[in-house]
Length: 593
Image (cartoon, rainbow, N blue to C red; front, top):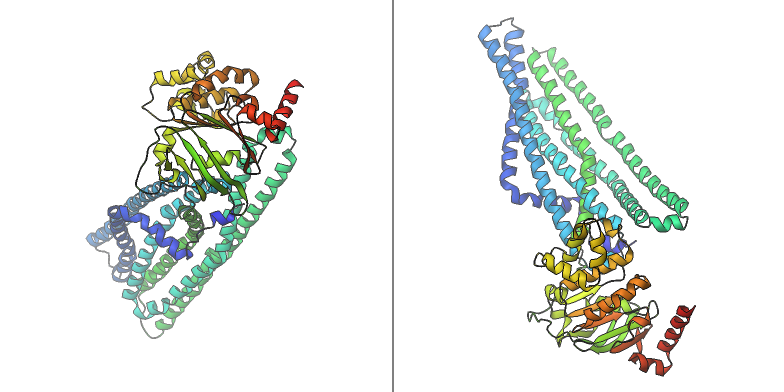
């Protein structure tokens, strides 16, 4: 697995990650300020409730003095504070959750946009399931942090501050003793973070592997069933699932020890200290029962927000790990090649020239070595060779999927590096061996979101490549629904739609990467005339497996181990009696058999 791609670069520590997450709140300053104002009001109404009870006990209950108007005022005041606290908490929670949804929406869009800009080398080495896990599971964990953790921490820290102020107002000496709780609780939180962080990393990694294996299994189901790989896949999935279960169980063990049980022990020790303090004072001074009640109540309320925060530490730790994984993608420098310079040239004739181009995917082994050739406007250059000879790499460089590191490629005399993406993609039409169709209908797959292409142009493109006949036989014609990857259509039908998609944009340069390799012989015969029409007036770069499909090419290049070993027309190459001649005899013999 491409851990080196996904782990670069590292964001420095939980503090840096948390600060970076908080920056996403800056565009929502108004909503944050309103939420904090409501939170302060809710905290004030909550903290003042025991004060009313203390007043009732000390001034009226113990003296047995119950004036009706005061009792009503105290009761109404207490109930009013309870209702106000509840209402204000509801509003501030709603505001925080709306804020969290807005932030995660922004983060997911940023993440998706970044993935659209990543270099193909990134996807070559990164399992799809791992990326899906980061876009879905990891962002969901961050959402939980903003929805529950952040609001809970802000609310409870505010409550703790209010409780400490009230405790100092009741008994400054005892409240000072209770301040010892602050470093103790902070120490528990730090200990929990340090112990749980590696476990959460392992858990998230296992979950990503689980998604990757699941994605691989679903996409390869025909091969799995045909090759009887079910037992192996079940065993591998079970092993990954077991490792994920062990990581989560370890997390549960840490939570069971360091969260509420430990806080309960600390609470009871402090409660014993408070009771001993008031008991000791009662021998020399009169103790106000109301003060004792209020202090014990505040002590209980002090540990309630602490327990809430510790319970949320679980989500916080998950969110920090997930945010680190998300930021690793957002910070990854492996972007698709971008145009250089400001000249902004255009493709108008379609001349393609490779000048001493060498290329390596891994920076070690060259898959292309000193490639030089010129495709003149309107001419067809075919590239043939055994598997792994570098044919598709030439297409990848021409489409600027990968940067040209050694040598240069020119389009109409201008360096490929200087063209805008829009100019390249609109003037170069690419047809791959394995056509990819999107969920939708046939018309939308031909148009591909280009609203400038009318329905008439969609139908004209389909007619041009001989696809109109089978499309009109479908119950809904051009509006026939297409499932994921076009699973409801045959391979030949999917390829014809990809032909129509390419011709709808009327490209100047046509690139065919073994475009007929997946098409049956009958369908191939039907589209050969269409291919000839497609190539007419266009510069065509055709990678071919079947030599019979490129015999009329103006120039044929024979690749072997990344080098051009032969070049010429079909007849010229046969006359040489070299590698092309051997390939031709092998295919002719296979065809006769």
